Image (tube, rainbow, N blue to C red):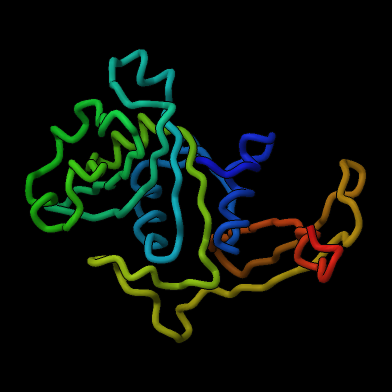
Length: 212
């Protein structure tokens, strides 16, 4: 929210990377179904920050009073009685505005988890989250695998079930439209491939009096 790079023409991903040293990117809820979105958030919530942007147009059409100017962060994802729910932290100076979406949430979620509404938190179903939030900015905390929030699922155990991860370095020079990186991925059988691209920050290599 208050990072200088954002106000100076940068983006939230840059701020999150500078702040945490993680790997950041963004995607849109319209590109994934609600159930797969919940599974993705639920699986990564222990070591990933999720910042979400309100779908202002959809809220205006349906009369849901979420504040598009306030910062919203996914605090946790949980299931109850066979349904999927997401807990949001809203940094709204005028108080929490859940647009009435919490009305569809069972009271047991408030009972079973420590976060309270007066602290800025509210729950909503994954279907409502998918409908009324349009952009998710994620930052994987590569140097901090466990943020130790109560009730979060544990990390995968070491073994053959771990995904294969590989880092590739391409185009050490300037990347332009005429020289994009080209990477070929060959998989044996159906699988999910996630590609995260990033650019080296020149400040990392600056030392001494040259460092800005």
